[in-house]
Image (cartoon, rainbow, N blue to C red; front, side, top):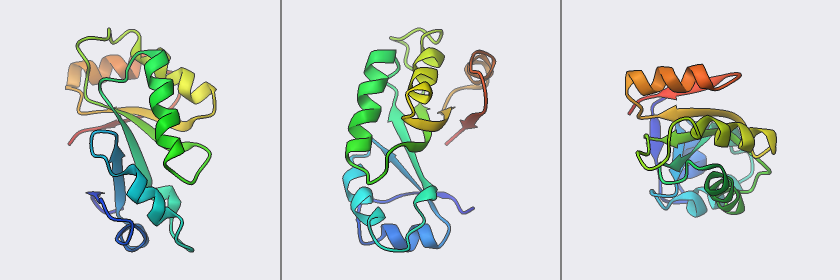
Length: 138
């Protein structure tokens, strides 16, 4: 798989996905709607869309609402991978795994993980999350 790619145009989405790039979308990037339009192109590899939820949406109620908003912009029933994009000092890390597990339990995402956590917080997240987790940096 090639490096993650930030795209804001629906015209470049199909080509990037079919070349093997993974596309990051996040509410802070404001590109989900454009990527969603590109995903409607016939023959596009939708499995390479890698959504992230920005760090302000870590509490269970906020995260669920945020994921539903993202899904409303995309032509698919659930996310393949939901990443929390950096730790949020306003929400205790103990609440975060519960929010991710809730999103998974509701069928909103298949896989969960964290991104841009330091090693200590990343290990803590891995210990508190059940099942598979994606731990990414950068």
